[in-house]
Image (cartoon, rainbow, N blue to C red; front, side):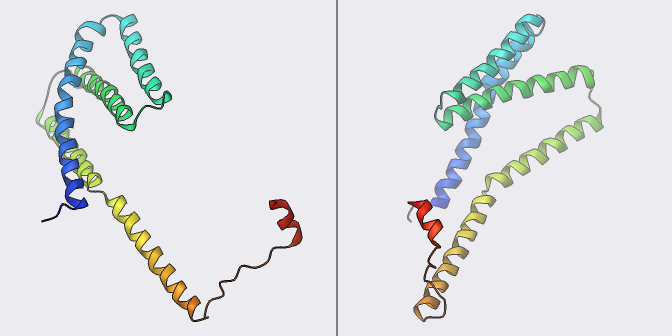
Amino acid sequence: MPWSSRKSRKLATQVSFALGFIASIPINLATSWFQQDIISNKFLSISVIIILAAICYLVIKMRAPRYLIVASMSFVAGIYVNLFSWWLQEDILHNSFTISNVFLILFITVLILVSGAFIGSHPISSLKSWLRRNFRKNARSRVRLAQYGRVNTRRRRQPNRQRNRRS
């Protein structure tokens, strides 16, 4: 059975999900280090946040390959999201989890994962393919009509002023 683009796209999506889960380990470790050693010192926490933002800016500015930009942005965004969740747990929930809080957290998690899987199924690329097929089909019908003389395909001659400007 030949290898299709659909199979390769599906495999790439599955591998990217697996690698994303594996990458969450160092992100969580970096966040734990940040929570234990850096947040207690305001100067260090502001410095590290500025350094992380500067690294992302430099990676984008030096026109690095797309995968390097995505990797650095994902790493920094993961750290920021983990810090946000830590702040949410400490300051808003006060380290107390009720049944309604846990249900809300799980519901939001499932909602985000389902929307990510929907986006990962490439509905936008299938829409682009559908539009491209329609455009080609319409273009073929115009060519057939032009062959039979039903559509005027001659370009109109431009006035003198417009011809002189293009030269």
